[in-house]
Length: 500
Image 1 (cartoon, rainbow, N blue to C red):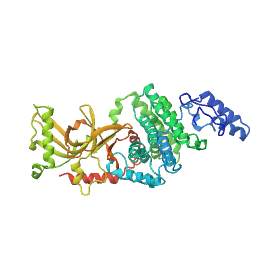
Image 2: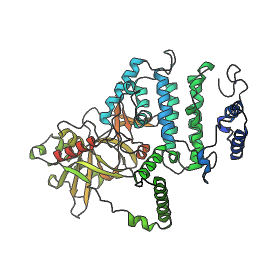
Image 3: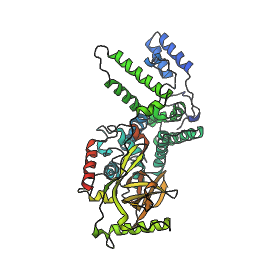
Image 4: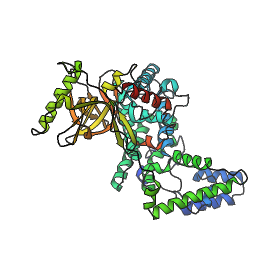
């Protein structure tokens, strides 16, 4: 049953609709409805108007001059995508379905899935977010928004492949994930790109109804408002430039910052009005005179490029050692890159355990196998996997160590020695590959490294799935991302312990 095949058993006489041609309420219609509500003489008449229009009363914010219906109310992406849709789908798969339905996850499979997710935290960089708990065990104990983000963006598709979820269900979920990722990514949008996001959500909703409702109108309650609301996401991008503008977290943070500045107990509201007025005035001034922004911004302290120097011992320079293999790979790389380049000598090399990467989301430390395995005990979460662009080709690898050398002309060479991920391919728009069977060592310039990534190793196929940091995490505070000072303090102690 779909929108073109109405049934008289439930909601007889309903309007047939098309997702691509939905009737949006106009502002004159909205105010006409408000007028009808104000003139209604009985509760029954009010209830009838509310049922027919969906408008219950005039909001307080209508007093503002900026109020314009319906664009005034943006969609909150974090609540819609993660705390509404994602939680609803998880409960539908695990609790609110029957064993004979293709999308039902049996309790033992759900337990396995939850355990795999919890175990995968060891290869999820701590700079991404806090640890991800087992959703099978912790679903009802305030599962955090960043954890639902992790399930949506990182874990459910790869583990669904590994646990052999029904392909029709995975295909449908992949449309949802791709639509969310496209909507949450900051980028200029053309109308064609917005239409593509619309098509992704429309395909998801159409196939959702076929999979989860089918021909049984008794299951129509599964078509929740949060699922249908997805079709409006492209329209909000068109109105506001980005779906992330409607983030409630951003508004709550701004309210909290202003609230902490209130000092007057006698007239707190007057104090609040002055604070807001000053903030608005400052913002307008910075927009009119951009040079003031540079004057108010403190000069950024440039972090060290490399951290934790790892001294090269004499016993490591013998044949067959890890360092000797690295050294030979470095010599081949430099020679292949430029025959006329200075030859690599052992005495000219300085070895490092960590690299500071600076990007739009701040600084992040890329560790190496050398630095992590020298710790006792090793860190609970690894940060030694990276994405790079070598010769215009995307590649992924495990950093083994970093090396620098000072050339005769005074310039500095910076190298990463790494184990490459092989047999790269994409499935559901996600990179995956396999580690080499024996020892495989490659060398690349540090400048080719793009970002730190996490990995997930499949228990059945042994495929390695790449986990890229999602930009939506940058909108959350450290507390909202589950980041604690304990992990940061432990990392500092590890840096001190390995600074040989």
